[in-house]
Image 1 (tube, one colour):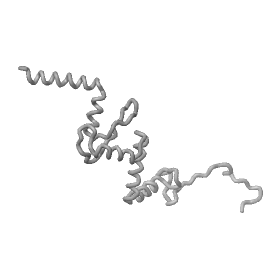
Image 2 (tube, rainbow, N blue to C red):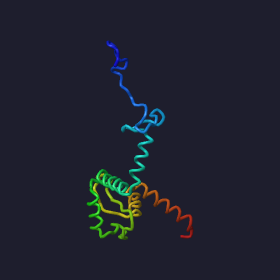
Image 3 (cartoon, rainbow, N blue to C red):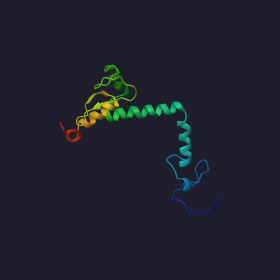
Length: 150
C-alpha cells in the first residue's frame, strides 16, 4: 500500500503492453489489433487455414463477395446462368472445362452471358475498336510483305 498522500506519477498516462500474451517483445515483432504480436497472429492464421474446411470456407466467401461486388449477382445466380447456357460458352459453344467468366458491358454494367477464358479475352480486345483497327492494319501490312505477288 502506498504511503498516505502519495500520487502516482503515471496517473492519466496510458500504459502499453511491452510483451504479447506469449511473451514475445512487441517492440521487436510489432503489434496487431488483437492482444498478440504479429508472429503469434501469423502462426494462428497458419494453424487456422491449414485445416481444409477453413480454407474452403475462405475461398467460398471470397468468390461470393467478388461476384456480389463486381456483378451484383450471387454464386447461385451465376450457376443458374451456366445451366441456362447448357454448360457451354455463349460464343464458341464449347463445354466449360474449368474457369468460367461472367461477360458484362463495362459501360453499363449489364450482364451478357458466361464465356470461356479464351472468348472472354478476345471479346475484351474487340470492344476496343481502336485496337481492332490497328490489328487489321498490322495484318494487312504483314500479309502484303509476305505475299508480294498478290
